[in-house]
Amino acid sequence: MKDKNPHHLCTWDDQADCAGCSEQGRLHCKWDRRLLTAFLVLFLPFGFCTFFGMALVWKISGAWWYLAAYGAFCIFFFVFFEIRILCSHCPFYGEDSRILHCLANHGIFKVWRYHPEPMNRFERTSLIVCFIFFGLFPVFANSYGIWYLSANYDSYGQVALLGMIGITAATLLTIITFFVVLQIYVCPKCINFSCPLNKAPKPEVDEYLGRNAVMREAWVRSGYQLEE
Image (cartoon, rainbow, N blue to C red; front, side, top):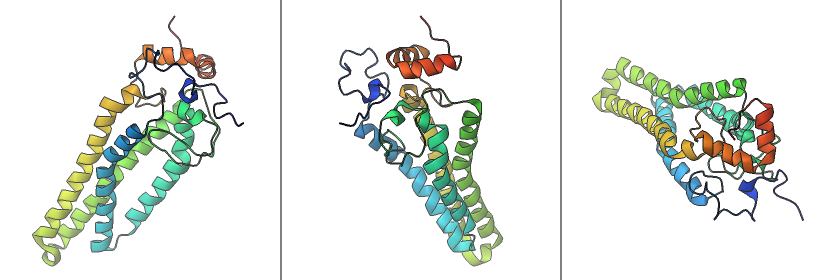
C-alpha cells in the first residue's frame, strides 16, 4: 500500500495524537475543508473586482493586454513559480500525492519535490515582489480606465467615470482587506513557517519542528536556532 506520508510529518499522520497535542487550535496543521472554504471566500471579492474591472477597461478602451498579462502572470505564478518558492517548503506539500492538498492553493498539480528546509532569501524576496504585483497591478489597470474615461468624458459621462472609480476603489479595498485578515487570522497559525508573511510564534514553530525530524534537521542545517 502506498505511503502517503513518506517524510513522517505529523500533518499527514492519521495516527497522530492530535487530541493530546498542545498546539491543537494554535496551528492550522491539518487539512480542513472549512479553512480552505474560508480562505476562498475571503479571496473572492478581490478576485471578482480584479477581473471585472480589467474586463471593463477592455470593453471601454480596447486595452485587452491588461487582462491578458495579468491572467498569464496568475497562471505562471500560482501554477508554477509560487508552488516552487513557497508551497514546496510547506508540510502540506510533503504528502505523497501529485495533487497539492492544502488550505490555500488546493488542487494544484505538484511539479516540484518537497523541500523541508526554510525558504532562502531569493525565494522570500521573489514572493514579496510577486505579491505586490498581484495586488497592485489590477489597481493600476483600473486607474488607466479612470484616465481613459476622463479623457473621453464627453462620450461616456459622469456615471461611467464614477463607476470606474468605484470598481478601482473596491479593488484596492478588497486586496488590503484580504492581506490584513490573513495577517490577523491566518498567518499566525500557518505552518509554512519561513514565508515572509508568517506570524506563527517561535515557541509554536519550535514545538512543531520538534515533532517532525525531517523539517527540524533541514532547518537546523540552514542555521535556525531551536530553543531548548
